[in-house]
Amino acid sequence: MGVMTVAVTAHGALDYFPCRYGRSRVLFRGPRRSLDGPYIGFLGGTETYGRFIETPFPALLEAGLGQPCVNFGVINAGLDLYLHDPAVLHLAERADLCVLQIMGAQNMSNRYYSVHPRRNDRFLRASDRLQALYPEVDFTEFHFNRHMLGRLQALAPERFAEVVEELRLAWVARMKHLLTMLRGRVLLLYFSEHAPSEKPVMDLDRDPLFIDRTMLEALRPRAAGLIEAPLSESARMRSSTGMVFSDFEADAAAELLGPAAHEEAAEILLPQLCELLA
Image 1 (tube, rainbow, N blue to C red):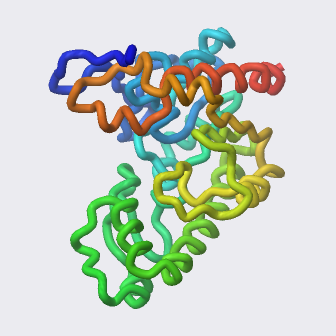
Image 2 (image 1 turned 60 degrees about the vertical axis):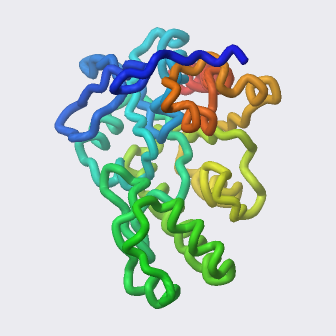
């Protein structure tokens, strides 16, 4: 297979050199970069962070650009992580430019449910509105948003569509707000196995969850650009080749984009970033 596995250690196989920036309580991927001179900020979820990836696309771009690329990505992050962390927003706003990975709409608080402020994939509680929509569900049994949404979809697809519509509306509003706060100096990155769908897809295994092209187009006027980096066939074939993970992490690694995908994303981003920074 060519899959790289390493003996299990307490923290998994790869050292992410976790570090903090500014006054944020969030641990980001290191090694820590200097924020004294010019830098490019990278915001996003698991892919930006580069879980199981030795050299994720922000690090590849740093080599190509010769300028510090600061990885503010966080595993399973949603928009709430950034909107509720003034310290990180301040650092992102100070960057010459930001690359913002398009994250799914499920990992943020909305009128139906609340999520953990830093671990956005964690479900905290259902609102009265959601309890009224699904009176037969005991929401105390859920710990993760995706698990909860899967149950709601299986129980009543037509009611589930109402929840999804709320998530989509909230996501677009929240993204517009974030782009305004970052003064539009943002390159949006759609980094996924697939190109964006033309209309909403209810498949809970398709990331970024519930995001379609109309939502992305609504953001285009507020951003410096929108880059789509769907996987090529060859990157899909080599998905986990070169990933670094312990035996214990193999299942999680199998669900993520591999090094070949990161190389493709960096290749697509590099000329765009050079143009914007010129």
